[in-house]
Amino acid sequence: TCYNMCTQKPPHDFSQQLYEKYKEAFEKYIKDVVLPSLREKHDEFLLRELVKRWGNHKVMVRWLSRFFFYLDRYFIARRSLPPLNDVGLLCFRKLVYEEVNVRAREAVITLITQEREGEQIDRALLKNVLDIFVDIGMGNMECYVNDFEKDMLSDTASYYTRKASNWIQEDSCPEYMIKAEECLKREKDRVTHYLHSSTEEKLIEQVQEQLLSKVSQQLLEKEHSGCYALLRDDKTEDLTRMYNLFSKIPKGLDPVSLMFKQHVTTEGIALVNQAEDAANSKKESRSASGASQEQVFIKKVIDLHEKYMLYVITCYSGHTLFHK
Image (cartoon, rainbow, N blue to C red; front, side):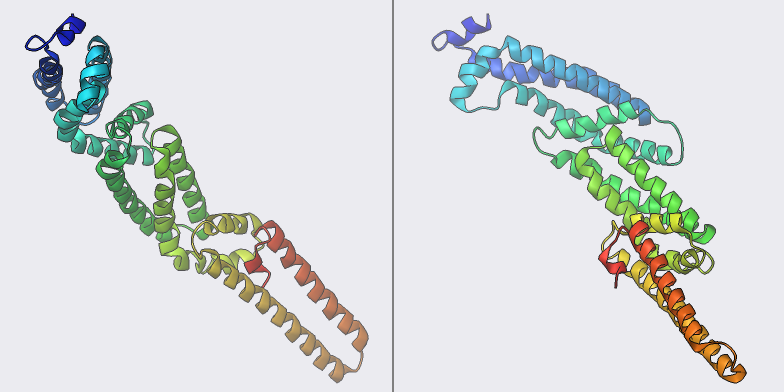
């Protein structure tokens, strides 16, 4: 029938009318059925309805495009009009997506926050919703980035700013680092399960900025648990974690390596002072051998060098900053 209506000579060629009716069919269905069903739903129920309606719409587009295949192949090609598939998707984008994307975004961000707080959420649902933000762009990421990602990243920054403010007051440096490490791991897991892969770098940068960069001085200089305390108490596991966290942020290792250098220098100076004190005592008592004291001093210096050289290799992955 479609073939017959499109292959007759004017005025009996109905290609243009069919093309217009194709679009009108989508518009009528969306206005009469889809939009009313979405307007009465909220939060997670809105997301479920949106996923359902998008799935139905794609099936409808696929089958109607097949029925009107002849239009696509000849009439549309000759007139340089949008293909039938694009017409169907654009109808959904203009009439549905543009109305509900803000509410959908807010619902998704709310669920992400709930998950960050330890609640179980339907990750598959979020993946399906965010796929709509990607697919509706029809080949580019503009809708996903502008209508979802920007607000999600802003919300992420606010969330972790609050967390950092609380944790930096309550926790020791090792406790804080364990929490930061776990947060970074979980954010990467979110990318794996429902966020678009292009979000990962931007998301991780936000978390690192709020949890590490902005509080680095406070964290590293904590009096009883910061970098100096960890070096003093030989907390190699915590020092390794510190390196792993701060090596991934711009200039993050500068303060860590400086503290390491200052600590080693302080210990070296302490050895020199001990040797001088011992030499002065020897002069007063005239008992101990000068040669043996020198040997003891040299051995202590060698031991100190070997100890912290092992730190450089095991805790700091041999990074050049820690060799200075």
